[in-house]
Length: 515
Image (cartoon, rainbow, N blue to C red; front, side, top):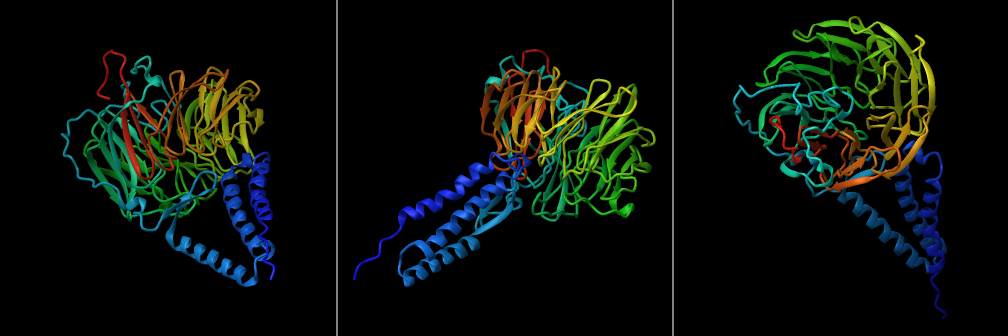
């Protein structure tokens, strides 16, 4: 009896088709809408489907062998399913997987044994080494780097400490000797004060709440704010607290969403507290009913509520536009300016329906605001010079999604769906498009860009409109990193939902603060 010949060439042709389709997809607008990871996952699935189709219909094997092959493939699929645990998604929707026998991220956190640091340790917020707010001392995502050596960006900094920590996308706020962040450990949402140079826990506060969501991950998303000796935090479920920054004593506490009977946002509260005069300003829940709210700094008592649009996920910004000091808010589908004392709407501009966004509005000069959204939507430069908002330009050259932007010399730098780009402000044209760092973060340091890639790598890039010039890079964190990096004096503090690391860069030889 003549033996059958296996159709290997046809098998190879079928296996090549999905990768070719993936290449074609990369040239479509959907790639720029942030669906690259989903397309890569679909490519893998199609390869497996093609293999099964070949085995069943085109291989030339006898039916008994085909069925045995399908059974083996099925057993392999079941075995993998039972052996693998899903741990969320990357920023482009590619799933994170881990072996089921490995510890879960929130099962390996180091213990928090309070160090008992002396309570007379300095708690400053105005020295060169302080980074007391989300996005820095001035909330503009830039620090001067004046304490660093001239060649700081060309060398790997010295590691001071490394801890396994709790879940969440909170960054650090640094004031004096302390570094504050938020973590999820088990069923408790924590505010933790670490000694910045040693990593020793100074105090810990626990709230028995846990926000869980498969796409965005578990735990708190906001960064503490330090102001005049106090620390203000907003948890994922809307708990707003004020602490003594040195002792951790709770001064006041508000369950903000419960108090106004509003539901949480789909991916939880992500905007960090903003200090405005004698109030702390936050956004509330998924409602159009006055979602911008201010609370008294000393007592926590509600001062005002305002607004008529559902909030987004971005932290509000504070600045002066056309001579008026105002709070600028990136809402769901619009951007608006509000009077600090009452929340009264000064102006509002519709930027169209857009998915979730976390990029803080960038206030430029005395009349312009730049807002950016991912998922293929792009950026809008709005001018208020005439008294009413007018759009100077809009395009999809910069789609920031998670990352915040850096402004330097009439050019804006940011991650365009994960790819570092430079855009000139006058007309919104992109001057260069560089390396894909995925959905990480960018911090301006002097004339450099400190890029925290989504995979945890640190990359230093010159902030020049001419071309992308990478100065130095080194491996830091080792898993998905959406948290914002912090440079406090000479200390570089980075973390993700599993680990925190603090590095020290060499100094410039001048007098420096404790950081």
